[in-house]
Image 1 (tube, helix red, strand yellow):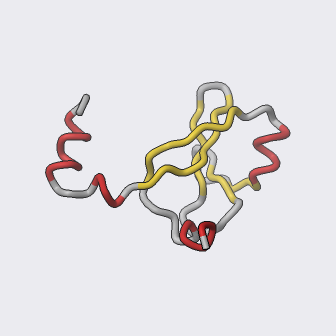
Image 2 (cartoon, rainbow, N blue to C red):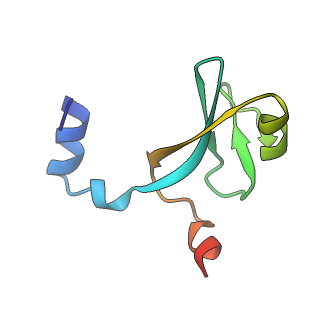
Length: 77
């Protein structure tokens, strides 16, 4: 563990509740998937955009360890 938040989450047994999710970076700003809307991403300030907008804008695709999205299990079945 590298920081206090990681230690706190691990101590509370919450790390196993996270999962790897696709996210994007544009100009060093992380853009994460919407919690309940599949294919929608959330910009800082709460603006919602479809994934294709991020791709068209040159967003760099990456993965982030986030709380599980409600639609994530649907993707794997």
